[in-house]
Image (cartoon, rainbow, N blue to C red):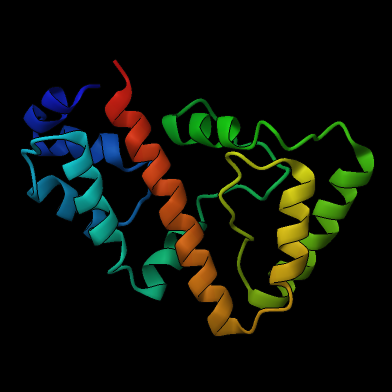
Length: 166
């Protein structure tokens, strides 16, 4: 979808399009309310600013829709498509890596009570595992901040991709 098409979408259709980027109602509403955008850069700037205002509860709600690193998203919807593409460099056929990610995910979830979230796009499985292990040393507040930042990065990549789809 190009920017002009996005600018002209009815609100309900724009909401439906944006929800797979992140299911945070305040972010979706902010992006839609700022239309029409003069450029993709302007749209991305608004999206980034709206993402800076996320509350912890909103981030936690959004995490519930993300698969664990190393697991494939179920379904054929846009969010599943995004996730499968983003995690494509995680080599699930490497049994040692798959086991290490499984164990790390479990430790992380026990420690922080949420799924481990990282921008997987541009990272291979070993780099993700290294980040997972590093983040297990965070305290709760540090991890909340890192998780929110990773979610912002994911959302911005997804929104940029939506605006570049023809």
